[in-house]
Image (cartoon, rainbow, N blue to C red):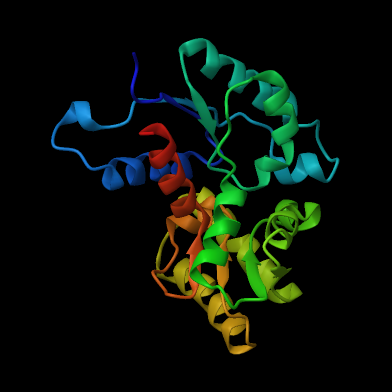
Length: 229
């Protein structure tokens, strides 16, 4: 009887964020040899329609492509699914309709982590794409735990959007990191007790700060725990 579950990853959104997910799974899995690591099946599909533009109605829905990815991963033998893209969770209903496999919801994992680490917090800053912000994805998950989602001011949201675009283009240099850090520091100065790196491109450059919760970290830990039973 199989003791450990095979993890199916809907990836490519973006490619580097998916690679970072894999790297962290390997780094955090207790292992003495290759066989101790988790079996992962990855669909690194960089051709998924742009989630933000699809949500804005500028291009067709990304849902059908994500649904097909889920079916492929299930056919390949995956026992569970996850997706290292916050905005793409808007299409979670499409994915669940296409596959009966359990899905590890990164946003739910992150909201739970915020509540566990910051039991007194009543607000959390959500640093994300405009697609995630427009759809209220984090507002839904955080409200379950009595936490209100707050967002950067317009100029700072533009800065976050530019940082995400830069990382997607391969730029993770000092200026990009500094621009992201300025938004975090500004919201902290305004009294926001905890910030969420709620885009996996931001996870790639996320500073290690006690008041920042990285959504990708929350997903990694949940995936390892579920896969290993």
